[in-house]
Length: 392
Image (tube, rainbow, N blue to C red; front, top):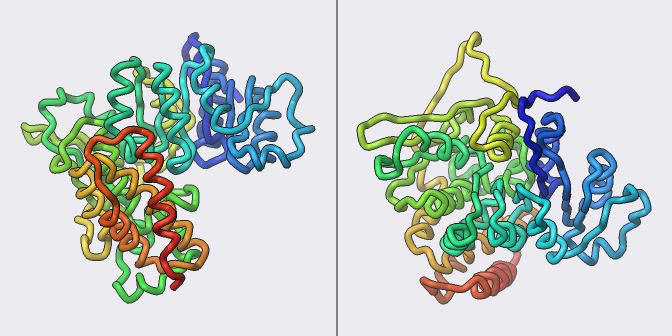
């Protein structure tokens, strides 16, 4: 592939979660860099055949099978010679902290990605953060760690990348509010009766984005936006009252920042994750890239509407957790992951996902200043509490 990048510098990239949607898009961006970016480490949890195929294509120095049990039973004979196999969380930490790695793409879905991200931040790496759960679970601890280590965290989520870009238009003390856009998912016009009948197939059909199953369901419940509120609170050092959500079905305006003088700066682009990924990998430079472009020769419509808090109660829950801080984010995130898994297994109604999260959150013993070990322990506890719910 001919390079669309114009730079002589080479940065070694570890892609944690290379077989997922973000990971695959990241490899496309790196492939288009003409050698200015190099994939030196790839990881997967259980998609090990695809991991091997990716290794055959890009020839990294390391591949990491994050699930030791899956790795032990897998046939690795097709892994290219010269590619070292690592396993388990220790393998993730090893590549995330290696001196030859400059950028770590944190794209492992869910709280499982926390340890690798934590290790990269502790090692002072540039972290392209696609794992929002890291900031939801341990936002204050991660930001404090980055300040001590000198790590740079650049968001990959389209909404937070848009905020990050728009913030360049002014000083932080000049920011009045941040507005995260939401597509509204497939059910933004559903009645309560219709929501009660939503199936897994229905929830996995997103109108504008192609994503993994967990985040697609989060979009349908708007829990993804609740988690993004919490992430933005810690990532950009905002007060919860400074963060709002607006429904924007076209998914072209990815977020907006309003300054104290009334100016609103928005970031627009096609719904293509390669753009925020590339921005995170090359920041502070802007380079020609492979992401799709908006066509302003065509008529374009941009609609905005406030979200319905009754139809999407996850938003209020997200604001509550952002205000509370402490252990609340870890419990909400874990409860949601477990509830989504239970819904996908046909053991929980769509409309019970958010109430189950609230119930577990209200039951937990809140601590305003937890350690990382406490947060990881509560992650396990919250999942167990959700799984105790009777099948419906």
